[in-house]
Length: 126
Image 1 (tube, one colour):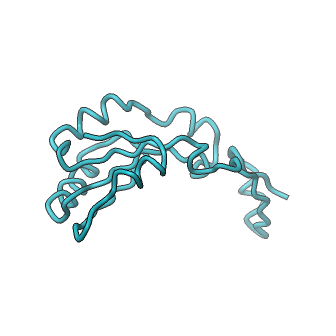
Image 2 (image 1 turned 120 degrees about the horizontal axis):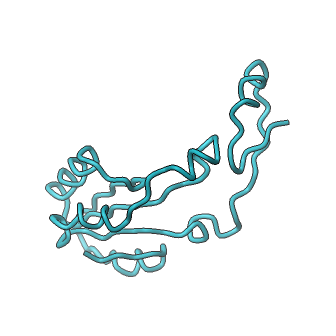
């Protein structure tokens, strides 16, 4: 299994002339649902890219992000049966957000009072 950490590395290793490519994007903490998608992608494609990226912009509360399970060693072990076909893409925040993660100001109208109870990282309300 090839493990890459940048988009450039990924592109350099995807020289597939007339061959199909499957993509299974994940946030890690792989389970049987992920593995069934990876198995299908492996059956239908010559190569499969599995990405593992815990995106902080997908969490409303910083404690949810902090408590999200992260065990890359376990994830890699679960991917072993697919290692001949697999490229594992584990990007850094900087690779996906080269200019940094920016705060978005949201105006939610009637939902604003509810939203203020659930503030999250990288999100502010007006």
